[in-house]
Length: 241
Length: 216
Image (cartoon, rainbow over all chains, first blue to last red):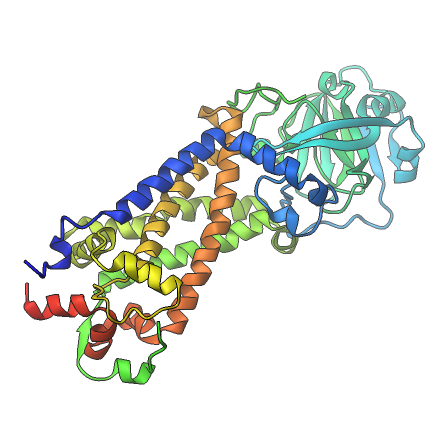
């Protein structure tokens, strides 16, 4: 027969199905092997993305922060910004950025690992050890935990006092080689190196010493309170160092 | 393809190219995709994030609409009302003689008017198949991202990477799709009203017209 009705042309090649299945196969391969591939892309694009700006920041796999904000837009710090340490302390603190800069600085070069999978390696951080701030304020007996508040009015976080005392938990005023930008949570943010990124609260304004852990913003959404990288949120895998 | 005069190609005897179920499925899927692109941008592009914010809400919309994305197609395919859509999917799946050549000639910007193309040309077939593949890959990678509890961390990184890559690739396809629709008003009209003229079919889908006239 010269002319077959199209739908009945069973002998014709099912290219459509092959395209769909081929893409699905590529997709599965991408999930399983995409991590090393994206790291390769990240290494190649490093010179472009290290400045943390421009179009390179949109390339998938490039070592980029995906900027999160939980309120409308990026919050702006009040002109009379102070970081407050209050609650169960002997001497409540009210610190300007300059006050923080005058304290003993801790510099870290460590990755930022988001619980959703993206990661930025070798981020440069400068700040004051959270433990140092707590020593200055003088934690009183019975205190066990910290409650953090952001000046965006919504974002909150928590740590136990033991976690807060770790040497790689800092109140950061510099990252990526300059002051912490507004997008990244400036002027002051937390950086909790051993935990997933959501613990590193941005736009930090208040640290309250309390006697029990109160789950923070993302934890209310179901994420783990003790957010150890590789050992929480049902995730396995190597903790990044 | 030469640009035909649109007026001449919409007048005269009208044929049904898409039934109401197909059109509804197309436009609901389009609405969902546009919502996903806009909310996706508000989760991914720093400038848009800074403008929109409200990550929790945006993420919820993105995930819910993403999960609902296949529903219009699935419901349309499911019952007796899906006859037209099922027949068109078979047409889109199978490549008939001339389709490959059409693609080759179109890439070289040469005439394809001598080819007996069916109801859909190879570009339309590819667009539909790739969109189907994109839906599956985005659903799969999105599921890995959204339900973190079952996968190694490296899979989540891989899924995030694939989700981003395929999204950008698909955005280009959507822009191309809309561009082609705007460049070919009779084809655009057919997904709105369902109708094409006989003259259009004769020029762009001669084999379909032959089959129509040969009867079932």
